[in-house]
Length: 409
Image 1: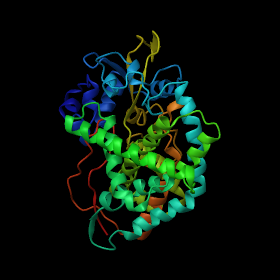
Image 2 (image 1 turned 180 degrees about the vertical axis):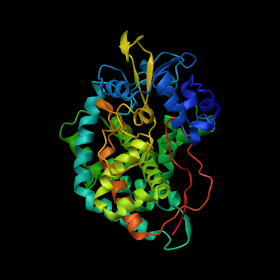
Image 3 (image 1 turned 135 degrees about the vertical axis):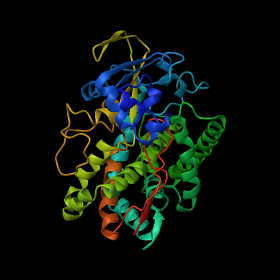
Image 4 (image 1 turned 90 degrees about the vertical axis):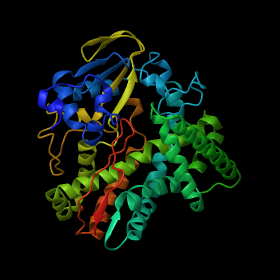
């Protein structure tokens, strides 16, 4: 038992409930529970940040479109301001992940329309890719599920949707891992260089694909987007490239973690795995319970746009508000037996995809992928077990995922 649990001491900083803290990296939930119970609206003065942990407060704030999102609007010296690009003070190279209206709506709406239509059209192809990846994994013995399935699968799928050449997949995966580091406000100089180089290479590749699709369209998302642009879409090439990157950031790492976290949970809860095997129609509900219980994205942020009360506390313009999605997902005022992983009851809606104008654009695709993986994986490996091992969790703050997951089949 941790010191904070023994003494009843609540966290006093956002750092203590993030992957920056080794204890929280291994298991953030006891600290989040204590915070929600004792200081549900916390002011972290050194990092100039507010922190919300109750379900109703988190839900109301993420859904409130009067808040700002862009880090440039955050108080200087705050944790959120560190995510801003000092070479882009006006936010010209900002993706929909952090844009505010009217630019956010102008860029997001055509992308959502094309992306969701593409997912619907390609769902049989998406499921076929999942089946191929799982069938290509070792038939017996011990292997790392993350390396063989959870990591390569989401990037293969988003690459197929975009129209990336299959022989460029390894490069594409490497570049996508680099740009994800943009979400780490405390990245090292080496990581920043890797991020910048990856973004440059990815932009160059997207430029190439866009030019090729204007000449010879194919059945892919990039063709859809350049056609939408030609039909009068109000977005330029720089914005399109930036938001194609946002699709990678929004759907690559987090779907990998949704797969890995889910398999880890099922193998640690054999009764739930048996329930899924007995009734495969529970797969969609199982995805939602994995998202609730072990959310790949632990927190999201907004910026107070004017002096006002938030969650019953007076807050000032430009103050960032971080919302602990993972804490909200285990709030007993909303969920019965919130600390129990159970795929059988129909629960209230979790907060793992955020909400409002910035609700996760990749949510429908993530649900398709995870549902199919859970069904197909345990169908191919009905006797899969979890050998004894030290589970190492990702060190990226505000994300939760397993680095390696050895399984026995």
